[in-house]
Image (cartoon, rainbow over the protein chains, first blue to last red):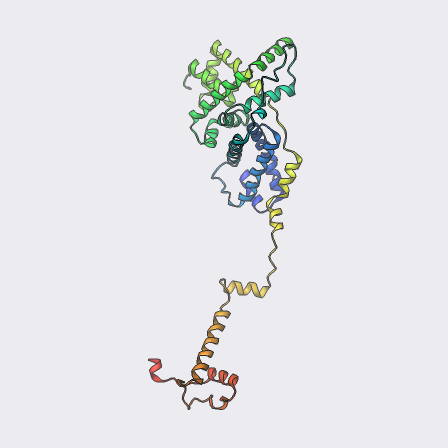
Length: 191
Length: 166
């Protein structure tokens, strides 16, 4: 069972094989939650998205056509679309005071950036990106998908993916300028 | 030999994909590596991109919770099937009937046809337009009892008028 392909596991899932369900989650649930986390900015929403993705796998397993598409790409596509839908709905109701604020949490010059704080600030910076730039960075940079796969999932050209990535990284560089300087200081003092 | 790339293109690549060659577009990877080895400005661009990569790597990452895994296992296809009412076991005779008549047994339409024939014949016999003549062999003995009459009419060896057959 451990050596089974994703297609074989999905076929076993359709027959109600609990071990196949477990193995499929072992392979893909963590990555699905990670993608949703980059998109949604918090673990609770990320797990809700991942749950919806896998419920769709359970529901549609019977109709899965082996070889027609790569299972992991399909998962990324479903997860990305669910995140984008939720973010669009959230955009209509979000309170401006709930937005991540990088400036108010800026560390003092004499204070080292703690790991947890840096993590929170990087996540906040990602949340400030336009959704499609964030999706491109989540898929390409964090999930390690090729530019072709990312383009397929976002339904754009490879050139458009490259443009989304460039603009996203440029904005992140600007948003995280303070953290970058702090990181440089840390490196210099530890050298 | 791979096609060479310009410093401008190299800058665009690291600007979009960062400092790790495994994230670069596969067709340009070796040309970008070659430029990197030969160009100090390319190495400076790479160092700058690596700095941002380092920051991005600090983004929080949590494993899926046990509760999520449990919820999904509880909702897996077998668990859903168990919630649905189980079909009653079918006997061997019923399976055999279904195998012979997959669209249902013909007993019901056949019975309905027989009943309608019997009713039609009975109605005809009690009315004035009865087509049965007195020479019918089985009808005479059963004229008083309606039930017996219906049965005997249905079973009678009736001689049908010639014109009915034509």
